[in-house]
Length: 479
Ligand code: NAD
Image (cartoon, rainbow, N blue to C red):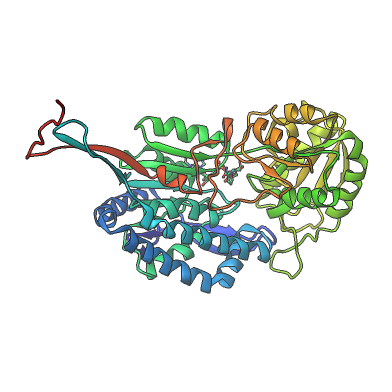
């Protein structure tokens, strides 16, 4: 773990084995943080806060940029480690390290735009200032699916605005995060500004949630855990941002470019082995193009190359854990019991590793778990709809509201979908991808607050008003 700029063991010496999901081999061991460790990390972040928050933003940004340059130089090694601990193919791991760098560069570039406001004459004697201040010590709790890029979404806006942070990676993916933070510290990030404590959720995560010195929690993970985070944070009225689960619908209209929509569905659902919050998780296709679409989609998906992400040409790695694979299989089983047909996939192609062949299902009953819950893996239910109204209604019939997409050549339909789909993002004729420039965050039970965009800065700053009475009062000019 990294506390106060130092690489440390757990206070009781305990470690966790980090295993490669493709082979089961031990990649490395990570310190398993204790109550003592998380206390020390919060202490370190608190001690570092005063200096860091009074360092000019441009200087903070310079340090962030210097570290980010080194991360980019070492992208191959970092990506290899990420593939080993997470399972994703090398190409996707490299893309994730680059995404980390882009997000860090984006937030560093905003340093010189940070500003407050002033009201010149509140009355005859006083003027007012609107001051933006960092919140203090923030906690970041991360999931395992994009451990590195999701860390940037938190540390980028937090550090540039002058906060200090304690990061808790997911228990199964701490290794690349630790190496990235080590690089940032070697590049000049002062001790204590950024600390990483891996370890069990019940100890490390809970302590971050409960410790009153931690003033904000930035959480990415499941809706179930997110509710617990919000409830626990409420005890100390901590600020929270919650980036939670989703069940993103994709709508394919009869006038869509079918080939492109098929590619969009395949990438959108099966990228990162289906383990993405903004993956396409329910597909609604207009009746008149359904058969053509599904035939092309099955053919495309059957060309995906499943295997160890370190091997050349692999497009689909293993699922991250045995438990996650079993969960997707159970959701598919439930759909089949309710009458669904599996057109391809839903097998375990290799004995070793948590591999699962991408599945496509049709005739899925509306009460199936696949349509009611988030499917966090490579299985896609495809449903027929009669028109746009039917598609939007079914799309919105969920507790989630993260992303959504529509494929059509008709601007009216695209605009109607963008207006009516209950989601934080709508892509039109595009695969679901995120941009630093655009705020991202779910509606309904998919989250609270925004990451990305200048909007994210608001979630790491308090707004304070200051009233100043002038000593040399100015006479009123009226009459
Ligand atoms: P998870 O909720 O199980 O865990 C997320 C993190 O919370 C982990 O670090 C975990 O150790 C920690 N945690 C668990 N219990 C805790 C507790 N009691 N106190 C404090 N911390 C605790 O989620 P996961 O399985 O790691 O990730 C998958 C989920 O994340 C999916 O639902 C996915 O949609 C969601 N996700 C959302 C986004 C987004 O931006 N909206 C992005 C990626 C993933």
